[in-house]
Image 1 (tube, helix red, strand yellow):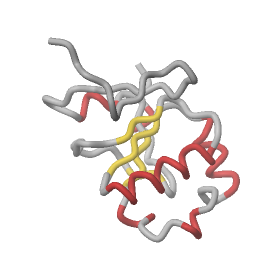
Image 2 (cartoon, helix red, strand yellow):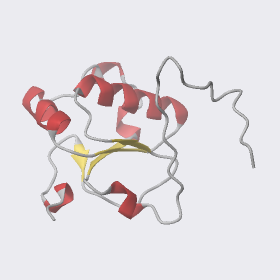
Image 3 (cartoon, helix red, strand yellow):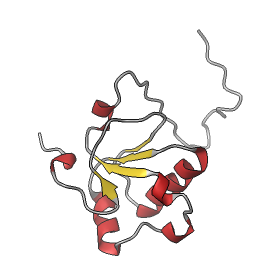
Image 4 (spheres, rainbow, N blue to C red):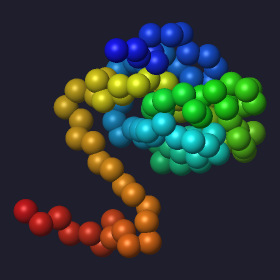
Length: 115
């Protein structure tokens, strides 16, 4: 199995390292603007890692030689953007939580988990 991390990642991506949670994981995002938004959100909320799988977005970032709107990201340097196809391998004991933003999604601010 080929792993993205087997190749030395180019800027702005960093090589895989132990996962720190909470973290943001984006599964093969299509648009570098989405990565930029995730990095800005991570910076605002004190999340130190954004993990990216796949190559679609990475190739676009390398072609542009920048992340969209990075000049507006004051905390950009505080967030590691890590490119790896198997990011969950680096998070021992973490519980993944997925959030879909769809019109019919339940508001997480009022969600009550039923035991």
